[in-house]
Image (cartoon, rainbow, N blue to C red):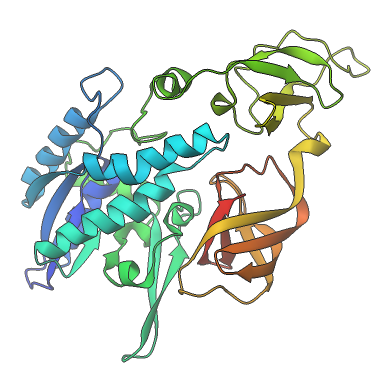
Length: 371
């Protein structure tokens, strides 16, 4: 791996302290860019607790920057994060929906506040360690940008990036989009990165590994109510609709409650099947494939299309959750900031507040919030 010393321009890399962003910075420096690392601090309410790794992450990012020879700047976006992401997160949970803050964080912080800051540093582009690709199409005078899935399908993160627009994509590079994760780890070990064996971060950024319900309890009131079956049989009391999501199986507190049994005497598990906000009622149904958990169609709102306009109606594919294979569907209507999808096969636990993301093969077209 030879060092290319020709400068291609200035690029600011979001360095989180993880392996992916570290290898991203190294690759771009090898390619001849002037690389500046930027560590974003997005949460500070309790970052000294056992659950928040911000301090260690900053130390890891600084160690990597020192090793590969790039500047590192730490920027505090906690105020912007609280206003643009966390406040919306709480509003959605209070309304009984299940939001995806990582989608909002990408649109509002990583590719807005971070991008603006990078441009103020004289950057030509920004880069992150996301697994996705950007393709330039159109003409020299009127270029357009497409968001594509990563080559490594097991790591593809286009789902979380579907709200990016043309201006953002025109300034963004995703160097890992064409690499398998195994190769990224191999590079990290080969060049001796101090975080080469660090685990990938999981879960919502500001919650970390902490107990989710205990975290939400600090911000949202607890309003217990009835937990009943679709037939109206009361099984127990829920702790507040905000703390449950469609398809949830664990943490219901009704594991020992009897329902219909199979011929061999065993019984299907209970799942959250519906939330009735006006009556503060949680409906639970027995069996993974209960009809209440299956949806042939959905309505979405707050649509965001990467091309700036909705795609033509017709046969496409969509995901209603991140870890899901593309599901064949038809875009039935796309009017203003709303659209409807009809699926060839019923989809399981389509959850209000989550993102429905639409694809045409490897191209991510955009998406919206499930209504």
